[in-house]
Length: 368
Image 1 (tube, helix red, strand yellow):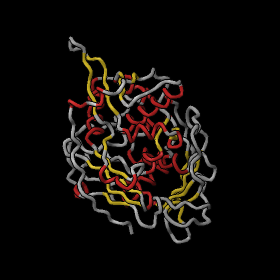
Image 2: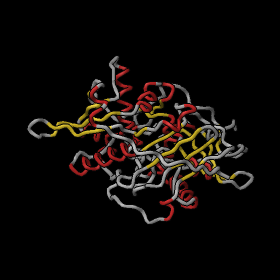
Image 3: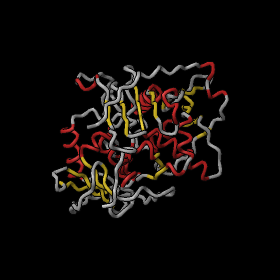
Image 4: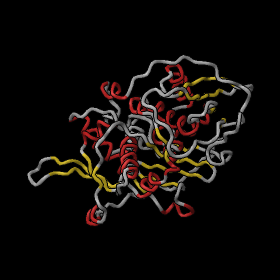
């Protein structure tokens, strides 16, 4: 049974505008874009740091797996940062890595034109998308995270938000002149450590479902480019996601994703082992768009998460045609939450406490 973990409520982040970090950090002007962002952090790919729902979530995520803990708290005014909002962080991290590759110094204080960010992550550039971007930045700033990852024994006394502060820039005449934000040191240090980065398929940004996007990140982290891929128990995936959805609904979403075969670069197959446990096997296939290899470090060995592996083998499943990145950008979809509402679902009022003592670090992969 997953271990229940009750934690104290995170304290509100104090924002003292007179002590803005922007006064002591050198601004980094975003580089011209030559394509979609391609770097994501391993830690963010395998732990439940974001809401997977487009409706507003206020119930916290309280995750524990062995000595790894993640707590994510939201405020009712904005709700929790979503997996679509995380595209802003992927873009920012990719900018910092690209700057380092060019021998430039990129600080946590970033300046950019909104259309530059929106275009890079496959969004439109109209007024509506601009307003959605501002709402995403508000969620990223107001969401509070506590974690043992890279924080050590005193992690309960350390908390951060995905964005420390942000602002719309205007000229003296009142004309809009771009935007700027300051990233937290925890995120910035993770981007600078190449061992913590993985490249992602540009087609990721056209995935519209929350579970679908989360599953791709899990697939990239665990299955990687290994021919044997990785297998997961459905219940293990449910616990790992931090989702408030009932297990039955979550499992149905997984089956539908497997039917659509919509994850770029991966084939999905569903099987049951000898004990009747339902498994999702993720197998790498040829890249769906621009080939992007892992330039950092290899993913962990192939295996299975959630239970001891068995001799079951994934059955071949159909493949579908993919579109390239320019086509994906042309076909705009609504990714960020539009409505600001509090769900009446009874699950919304309780925390998502997941993980378990049987998981040393949240995973139990063994060679098949």
